Image (cartoon, rainbow, N blue to C red):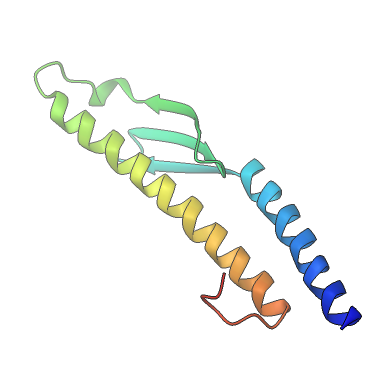
Length: 101
């Protein structure tokens, strides 16, 4: 019983450390052929947004809106996919079935 409790405690400690590490991780995303670039961290906070001047067209704001939205959506997806993969690997290390977390 003590061994099981130690394993649970170790898992919880490693999960907390991994969560903190993932929040600090930074991702770089580009959309629109690189016309829009952004950086996002693991806490899903956009920390930087760069827009190439050539994509800014006052007569066509919809294109810029679409490209920025695509970049943000891709960034969030990448953060979530990375976190899920890392947590799955940690769970596997402790013999926890996939999807149980």
